[in-house]
Length: 84
Image 1 (cartoon, one colour):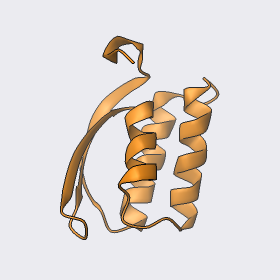
Image 2 (cartoon, rainbow, N blue to C red):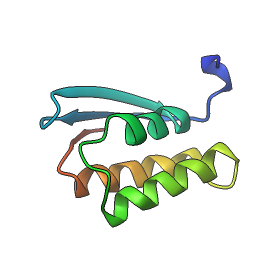
Image 3 (cartoon, helix red, strand yellow):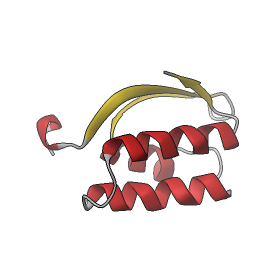
């Protein structure tokens, strides 16, 4: 998928100390990818909500800004450092 077709938002940096991974997330699709493939945990209320909002965002039922906010809440829940 070309970058200009993504549902973009203001970038969010994520530092996952448990996995040694650092990501900069720019879009709904990237948020979904990091949550489903590289997240340090696969449970938690905010994690589940963020996955749901990503799905809604990919189908234009949630704004990219809503996805960004949900990702940040999930990061805080999982003790992932957020760099805005």
